[in-house]
Length: 329
Image (cartoon, rainbow, N blue to C red; front, top):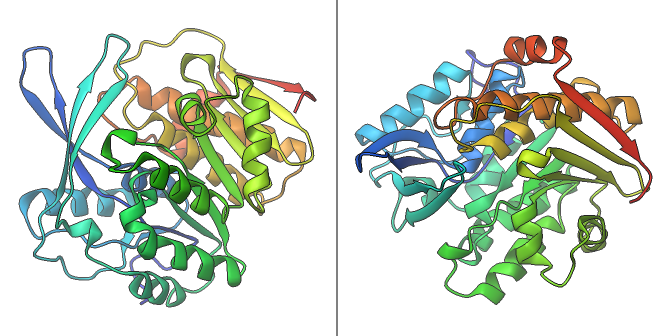
């Protein structure tokens, strides 16, 4: 399955690809390519990480637009041909701070057309894969049989597994089953990303995010937890007790926060891969700063518009991101 146009694939991403219909102030809806895993795949490729998107896309107009945006970002497709199922849709309303609220339409859709065996086969067909990514809607209980065996197979072959919780409780029919499914996926991860909101849903009895990170480490082999905290920046917590926190030195002009977490995760993962997946503190500092820069550039643009590696390098060269270390974890 090696694609001659994309010969250096290092990462695979499996999960939702959809169209965000974002409500505008005048009541109209603007269509943007979206979906957390789809955004992550695009953002990784734009950071210079050769990436294959493993799920199917629809042959409908929205599916063609999704495919075009992936191609323009440099993402390869595991499915050479589109499928007949329609594209997933998300209705997005923004609050006063630009934070999105979602309503999803995802029954019988293209990005849910495959199964675990197809994901495993597609991943195994690619040489030199270092990283497998998933999260968000892929963690719903009804898709557990599709993604968990694939993650288990990736782990068995020594592929680094990165999972973004990115919880969407409004979509879950059974909240307890949803939490269990999320924890099962996080228990297979080497790198976990969560937001403040995710932690509040997963561990509502814990107010200290560092205590919550300890709970995440207890789920499985994860060595690194990335925590996004909105305007308060982002942090990394390691299993051995290191804590790094990143903030922007100056306030940003925020268009909206759609895709910010996805862009952050892409920058972080790209930074780690660039240094061979090392976990020394200088590598973590550089990767965290890169993730922060990716998110900061994205929030200044409407919708999810991941920055390029060059844009991130220019942002970091300004000294905009400040990193602090702490041993509280």
